[in-house]
Image 1 (cartoon, each protein chain N blue to C red):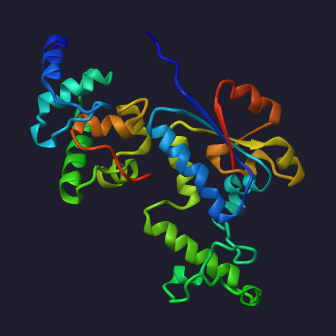
Image 2: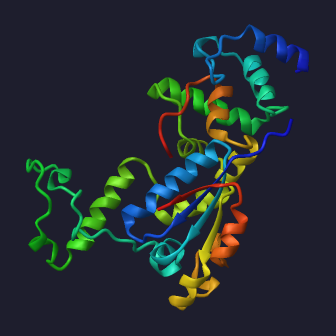
Length: 107
Length: 167
Protein backbone atom coordinates (compact mmCIF):
# COMPACT_ATOMS: atom_id res chain seq x y z
CA UNK A 1 0.00 0.00 0.00
CA UNK A 2 1.39 3.40 -0.95
CA UNK A 3 1.79 6.07 1.68
CA UNK A 4 -0.73 8.18 -0.20
CA UNK A 5 -3.38 5.48 -0.19
CA UNK A 6 -2.76 4.93 3.51
CA UNK A 7 -3.10 8.64 4.22
CA UNK A 8 -6.35 8.84 2.27
CA UNK A 9 -7.78 5.91 4.22
CA UNK A 10 -6.61 7.31 7.56
CA UNK A 11 -8.19 10.68 6.83
CA UNK A 12 -11.54 9.05 6.17
CA UNK A 13 -11.57 7.14 9.49
CA UNK A 14 -13.48 8.02 12.62
CA UNK A 15 -10.94 7.54 15.41
CA UNK A 16 -11.10 8.37 19.10
CA UNK A 17 -8.56 10.63 20.85
CA UNK A 18 -6.06 7.80 21.24
CA UNK A 19 -6.40 6.62 17.66
CA UNK A 20 -8.71 3.64 18.17
CA UNK A 21 -11.34 2.98 15.53
CA UNK A 22 -14.65 4.26 16.90
CA UNK A 23 -16.81 1.66 15.19
CA UNK A 24 -15.19 -1.80 14.94
CA UNK A 25 -17.82 -2.75 12.33
CA UNK A 26 -16.26 -0.40 9.79
CA UNK A 27 -12.90 -2.24 9.94
CA UNK A 28 -11.44 -3.71 6.75
CA UNK A 29 -8.07 -5.29 5.90
CA UNK A 30 -7.12 -2.12 4.00
CA UNK A 31 -7.88 -0.04 7.07
CA UNK A 32 -5.67 -2.39 9.11
CA UNK A 33 -2.83 -1.86 6.66
CA UNK A 34 -3.22 1.91 6.79
CA UNK A 35 -3.36 1.89 10.60
CA UNK A 36 -0.29 -0.38 10.70
CA UNK A 37 1.65 2.06 8.53
CA UNK A 38 0.67 4.86 10.85
CA UNK A 39 2.08 2.77 13.72
CA UNK A 40 5.35 2.29 11.89
CA UNK A 41 4.74 -1.24 10.62
CA UNK A 42 5.32 -1.01 6.88
CA UNK A 43 3.96 -4.40 5.95
CA UNK A 44 1.62 -6.83 7.64
CA UNK A 45 2.96 -10.38 7.37
CA UNK A 46 1.14 -13.66 7.86
CA UNK A 47 2.09 -13.65 11.55
CA UNK A 48 0.68 -10.13 11.96
CA UNK A 49 -2.59 -11.24 10.37
CA UNK A 50 -2.78 -14.28 12.62
CA UNK A 51 -2.61 -11.98 15.65
CA UNK A 52 -5.06 -9.46 14.17
CA UNK A 53 -7.59 -12.13 13.25
CA UNK A 54 -7.30 -13.77 16.66
CA UNK A 55 -7.87 -10.40 18.34
CA UNK A 56 -10.96 -9.69 16.26
CA UNK A 57 -12.43 -13.13 16.91
CA UNK A 58 -11.65 -12.90 20.60
CA UNK A 59 -13.16 -9.41 20.86
CA UNK A 60 -16.31 -10.51 19.04
CA UNK A 61 -16.73 -13.51 21.32
CA UNK A 62 -15.99 -11.89 24.65
CA UNK A 63 -16.79 -8.26 23.96
CA UNK A 64 -13.34 -7.18 25.14
CA UNK A 65 -10.12 -6.96 23.18
CA UNK A 66 -7.61 -9.64 24.28
CA UNK A 67 -4.63 -9.04 26.56
CA UNK A 68 -1.11 -9.81 25.35
CA UNK A 69 -1.02 -13.07 27.26
CA UNK A 70 -4.33 -14.14 25.78
CA UNK A 71 -2.86 -13.39 22.34
CA UNK A 72 0.29 -15.47 22.88
CA UNK A 73 -1.71 -18.32 24.42
CA UNK A 74 -4.37 -18.18 21.73
CA UNK A 75 -2.15 -17.91 18.66
CA UNK A 76 0.88 -19.90 19.79
CA UNK A 77 3.04 -16.92 18.85
CA UNK A 78 5.76 -16.34 21.46
CA UNK A 79 6.08 -13.22 23.58
CA UNK A 80 9.40 -12.47 21.88
CA UNK A 81 7.85 -12.70 18.43
CA UNK A 82 4.80 -10.65 19.43
CA UNK A 83 7.04 -7.83 20.67
CA UNK A 84 9.15 -8.06 17.50
CA UNK A 85 6.11 -7.98 15.20
CA UNK A 86 4.52 -5.00 16.97
CA UNK A 87 7.54 -3.18 18.37
CA UNK A 88 7.34 -0.49 21.04
CA UNK A 89 4.08 -1.27 22.72
CA UNK A 90 2.15 -4.19 21.22
CA UNK A 91 -0.76 -3.83 23.67
CA UNK A 92 -2.27 -0.76 22.05
CA UNK A 93 -0.80 -1.36 18.59
CA UNK A 94 -2.46 -4.72 18.09
CA UNK A 95 -5.79 -3.39 19.36
CA UNK A 96 -5.63 -0.31 17.15
CA UNK A 97 -4.70 -2.17 13.98
CA UNK A 98 -7.24 -4.92 14.63
CA UNK A 99 -9.89 -2.26 15.14
CA UNK A 100 -10.92 -3.57 18.53
CA UNK A 101 -11.09 -1.46 21.68
CA UNK A 102 -8.32 -0.80 24.12
CA UNK A 103 -7.41 -3.97 26.08
CA UNK A 104 -9.10 -3.96 29.46
CA UNK A 105 -7.15 -6.72 31.19
CA UNK A 106 -3.72 -6.25 32.74
CA UNK A 107 -1.80 -9.34 31.70
CA UNK B 1 11.58 13.62 15.27
CA UNK B 2 12.94 10.75 17.31
CA UNK B 3 10.80 10.74 20.41
CA UNK B 4 12.58 9.67 23.56
CA UNK B 5 11.35 6.36 24.93
CA UNK B 6 9.88 6.53 28.41
CA UNK B 7 11.83 4.48 30.95
CA UNK B 8 10.66 2.83 34.16
CA UNK B 9 12.66 1.02 36.79
CA UNK B 10 11.25 -1.17 39.53
CA UNK B 11 13.03 -2.08 42.75
CA UNK B 12 11.66 -5.32 44.18
CA UNK B 13 12.59 -5.63 47.83
CA UNK B 14 9.97 -8.11 49.05
CA UNK B 15 9.93 -11.87 48.69
CA UNK B 16 6.37 -12.67 49.77
CA UNK B 17 4.14 -14.16 47.11
CA UNK B 18 1.68 -11.26 47.13
CA UNK B 19 4.46 -8.68 46.93
CA UNK B 20 6.01 -10.32 43.89
CA UNK B 21 3.15 -9.41 41.61
CA UNK B 22 2.76 -5.60 41.70
CA UNK B 23 6.09 -4.92 39.97
CA UNK B 24 5.67 -7.78 37.53
CA UNK B 25 2.19 -6.68 36.45
CA UNK B 26 3.17 -3.05 36.12
CA UNK B 27 6.34 -3.96 34.23
CA UNK B 28 4.32 -6.06 31.82
CA UNK B 29 1.86 -3.21 31.30
CA UNK B 30 4.75 -0.80 30.73
CA UNK B 31 6.37 -3.09 28.15
CA UNK B 32 3.03 -3.49 26.43
CA UNK B 33 2.84 0.29 26.12
CA UNK B 34 6.34 0.59 24.70
CA UNK B 35 8.08 1.71 27.89
CA UNK B 36 11.65 0.49 28.64
CA UNK B 37 11.75 -1.58 31.82
CA UNK B 38 14.56 -2.42 34.24
CA UNK B 39 13.93 -4.42 37.41
CA UNK B 40 16.35 -4.62 40.33
CA UNK B 41 15.86 -7.40 42.88
CA UNK B 42 17.23 -6.61 46.30
CA UNK B 43 16.99 -8.07 49.80
CA UNK B 44 14.07 -10.54 49.97
CA UNK B 45 13.16 -9.50 46.45
CA UNK B 46 16.12 -11.58 45.29
CA UNK B 47 13.97 -14.63 46.09
CA UNK B 48 11.91 -13.80 43.01
CA UNK B 49 14.85 -14.62 40.73
CA UNK B 50 16.56 -17.28 42.84
CA UNK B 51 16.15 -20.73 41.26
CA UNK B 52 15.55 -22.48 44.58
CA UNK B 53 13.02 -19.93 45.83
CA UNK B 54 11.03 -18.64 42.84
CA UNK B 55 8.56 -21.54 42.74
CA UNK B 56 8.21 -21.64 46.52
CA UNK B 57 7.18 -18.08 47.37
CA UNK B 58 4.73 -17.98 50.24
CA UNK B 59 2.16 -15.81 51.91
CA UNK B 60 1.78 -16.03 55.68
CA UNK B 61 -1.57 -15.29 57.37
CA UNK B 62 0.37 -13.93 60.38
CA UNK B 63 0.28 -10.16 60.58
CA UNK B 64 -1.80 -10.02 57.41
CA UNK B 65 -4.81 -7.86 58.22
CA UNK B 66 -6.10 -7.83 54.66
CA UNK B 67 -6.60 -11.54 54.26
CA UNK B 68 -10.18 -12.10 55.40
CA UNK B 69 -11.91 -15.43 55.75
CA UNK B 70 -14.66 -14.08 53.51
CA UNK B 71 -12.15 -14.38 50.62
CA UNK B 72 -12.67 -18.12 50.90
CA UNK B 73 -16.39 -17.72 50.47
CA UNK B 74 -17.26 -17.85 54.17
CA UNK B 75 -20.02 -15.55 55.47
CA UNK B 76 -17.68 -14.07 58.07
CA UNK B 77 -17.74 -10.42 57.06
CA UNK B 78 -14.67 -8.52 58.15
CA UNK B 79 -13.19 -11.33 60.26
CA UNK B 80 -9.58 -12.11 59.55
CA UNK B 81 -7.89 -15.45 59.97
CA UNK B 82 -7.52 -15.61 63.79
CA UNK B 83 -3.89 -15.31 64.85
CA UNK B 84 -4.13 -18.47 66.96
CA UNK B 85 -5.14 -20.37 63.82
CA UNK B 86 -2.28 -18.91 61.87
CA UNK B 87 0.24 -20.72 64.07
CA UNK B 88 -1.16 -24.14 63.17
CA UNK B 89 1.45 -26.01 61.09
CA UNK B 90 0.49 -25.89 57.44
CA UNK B 91 -1.39 -22.59 57.60
CA UNK B 92 1.24 -20.73 55.57
CA UNK B 93 1.16 -23.51 53.00
CA UNK B 94 -2.62 -23.23 52.94
CA UNK B 95 -2.76 -19.45 52.50
CA UNK B 96 0.00 -19.64 49.86
CA UNK B 97 -1.92 -22.30 47.97
CA UNK B 98 -5.09 -20.25 48.24
CA UNK B 99 -3.41 -17.07 46.97
CA UNK B 100 -1.85 -18.95 44.04
CA UNK B 101 -5.31 -20.15 43.13
CA UNK B 102 -6.72 -16.62 43.26
CA UNK B 103 -3.83 -15.40 41.10
CA UNK B 104 -4.44 -18.15 38.54
CA UNK B 105 -8.14 -17.24 38.43
CA UNK B 106 -7.29 -13.86 36.91
CA UNK B 107 -5.00 -15.58 34.38
CA UNK B 108 -1.80 -14.25 35.91
CA UNK B 109 1.08 -16.68 35.39
CA UNK B 110 3.27 -18.11 38.16
CA UNK B 111 6.29 -15.92 39.00
CA UNK B 112 8.83 -18.02 37.08
CA UNK B 113 6.78 -17.89 33.88
CA UNK B 114 6.18 -14.17 34.43
CA UNK B 115 9.94 -13.57 34.55
CA UNK B 116 10.34 -15.38 31.25
CA UNK B 117 7.56 -13.28 29.67
CA UNK B 118 9.11 -10.04 30.94
CA UNK B 119 12.56 -10.99 29.71
CA UNK B 120 11.17 -12.04 26.31
CA UNK B 121 9.35 -8.73 26.09
CA UNK B 122 12.62 -6.89 26.62
CA UNK B 123 12.77 -6.13 30.35
CA UNK B 124 16.22 -6.16 31.92
CA UNK B 125 16.40 -8.05 35.20
CA UNK B 126 19.26 -7.63 37.69
CA UNK B 127 20.13 -9.10 41.04
CA UNK B 128 21.56 -6.92 43.81
CA UNK B 129 25.26 -7.44 44.52
CA UNK B 130 25.13 -6.81 48.23
CA UNK B 131 22.17 -9.15 48.74
CA UNK B 132 23.80 -11.87 46.66
CA UNK B 133 26.96 -11.55 48.81
CA UNK B 134 24.88 -11.60 51.98
CA UNK B 135 22.96 -14.72 50.93
CA UNK B 136 26.02 -16.41 49.39
CA UNK B 137 24.45 -16.54 45.95
CA UNK B 138 26.31 -16.58 42.65
CA UNK B 139 24.87 -15.84 39.18
CA UNK B 140 24.37 -19.60 38.72
CA UNK B 141 21.88 -19.60 41.57
CA UNK B 142 19.67 -17.16 39.69
CA UNK B 143 17.14 -17.94 36.95
CA UNK B 144 18.58 -17.61 33.46
CA UNK B 145 16.63 -14.43 32.65
CA UNK B 146 18.39 -12.60 35.48
CA UNK B 147 21.94 -13.82 35.72
CA UNK B 148 23.58 -10.46 35.98
CA UNK B 149 24.39 -9.13 39.43
CA UNK B 150 24.99 -5.40 39.72
CA UNK B 151 25.79 -2.95 42.48
CA UNK B 152 23.36 -0.29 43.65
CA UNK B 153 25.55 2.31 42.02
CA UNK B 154 25.46 0.51 38.66
CA UNK B 155 21.67 0.32 38.90
CA UNK B 156 21.50 4.06 39.55
CA UNK B 157 23.69 4.70 36.51
CA UNK B 158 21.69 2.47 34.18
CA UNK B 159 18.36 3.99 35.18
CA UNK B 160 19.22 7.60 34.51
CA UNK B 161 16.08 9.43 33.47
CA UNK B 162 13.80 6.55 34.46
CA UNK B 163 10.79 6.73 36.73
CA UNK B 164 11.70 4.56 39.69
CA UNK B 165 9.11 2.54 41.57
CA UNK B 166 10.08 0.93 44.88
CA UNK B 167 8.15 -2.10 46.03
